[in-house]
Image (cartoon, rainbow, N blue to C red):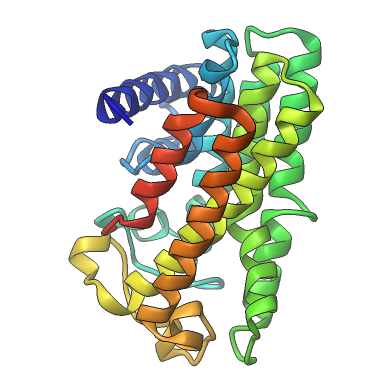
Length: 294
């Protein structure tokens, strides 16, 4: 896509500005828990979920203000999941985005509360969005569905279950549909909610979201065995070292990447066929996620 980088950085700037605004509204600095939440929330990252919310809304001609609040909300919820994921009772990782994880910087109890806070305030951000009541309800439903017992939390439960058990490809797909794909789907559905999109468009976006979510996770699995901690900004090799089944373990890095390329091509072809040239940014974003190095 021509001018992809310009569009991406514009969305990134808008997303970061929305997060700064949300911090001012919902995370007062006098609280150490809020400080810990801001430390993690404003600590960098690709902001893929927020970018998706903003770009989908733009693609569908929706209002910017609503999309920006929804983008902040999905990034806040994603950040909560990362804080909790790094805790000793979960993945026990000391690094996140190239610096100490929240629990290493602020202590475990404060990090736990910071994650709880971000989860809660994400819905406050949705509730206070400059959007119609219908859009707010749709966005809240999308976010809760993507995060809860049918989405990310369930995927994380399955991921923990299979840490010590061999998993098949079908089981890995189910894990990553919940753990990664569900919140990416929430992001695109929140953009669609801001724009008042109909059910047919939402279905197309759902297929796209789960497709790129699976690709994202396969690439993550490969990078875990082919990259370095310096490149990724987080520990590597822990999955394979613990005997956990990943796509890279199941098929080897090269075959796993072949599978990712095939899924990505199928996903983008279906998207462009359904939505036409206006979806070129989303297709290009998928292609960039496929070849990312961190």
